[in-house]
Image (cartoon, rainbow, N blue to C red; front, side, top):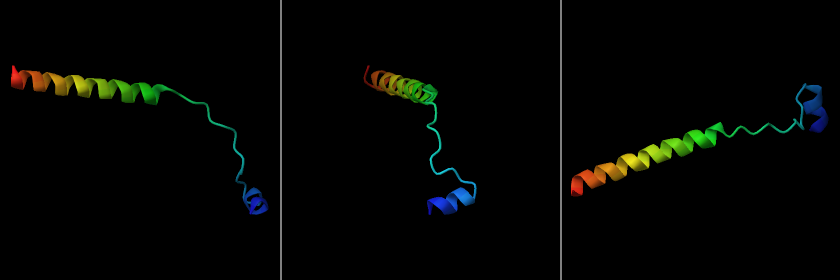
Length: 47
């Protein structure tokens, strides 16, 4: 299977990808905005 993939031009052991943390930051900022929105809606309803 390894030889077949190498013959087809597929690298079976690609180099590791460089991690980019922008996805984590985007998700964290989105979750923060959603939580602030929900809390403000709850406070406006009960106060």
